[in-house]
Amino acid sequence: MQPVPVTLTGEFARLEPLGLEHAADLARVGTEADIWRYLPTRAPRDDGEMRVLIETALAEAARGVRLPFAIIDLADGRAVGSTSYLDIAPAHQRIEIGWTWLGARARRTAINTECKSLLLKHAFATLGCGRVQLKTDGRNLRSQAAIERLGAVKEGVLRRHMVLPDGFVRDTVMYAILREEWPMVTKRLQAALRR
Image (cartoon, rainbow, N blue to C red; front, side, top):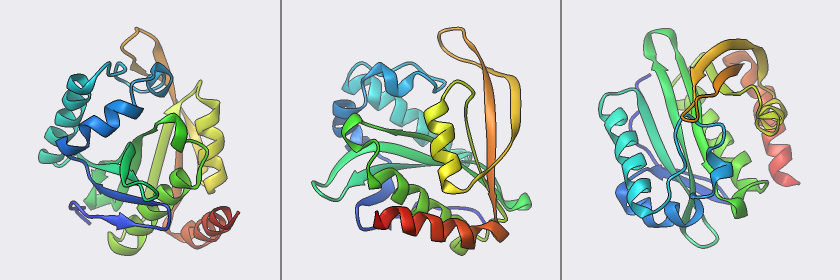
């Protein structure tokens, strides 16, 4: 159950291994502060700072603690965001989907739903996960609603879980989907993509 870099392709989006070649596209769509409000890093202000974020993700990948992807919009072939596998725990058949962000034009489109579908299918069908977890800032009600629409079960709140760059002490809401729940979740995702 050790994930390796892979490309996952759907009808609207492609997830491909994140690399420095994505920096310019990601800087173009990813410098608005609102994207980063709930993430544990400051908003990148330019190509250089986006490159640093990518280099950090690649260093974590080299240590085996993260598998980052660029989200490619198939309509124009450009990177419109990023997502990752995290908390990779093969002995426990567990993985997390996180560090997901999208530029404004890709939000509330089929791209995010399809990306979650591709990552979940790969986790359960290919990697053999028993549990896929997701977490979000307790203040991020939009993210919580989106995770709940997937069919993930809210498991609780980790209080005072992390300190954000602006000094705010964040509570983190934890969700999970279990292997037994995946068939129902995949039906829900397919229905959402048909809308």
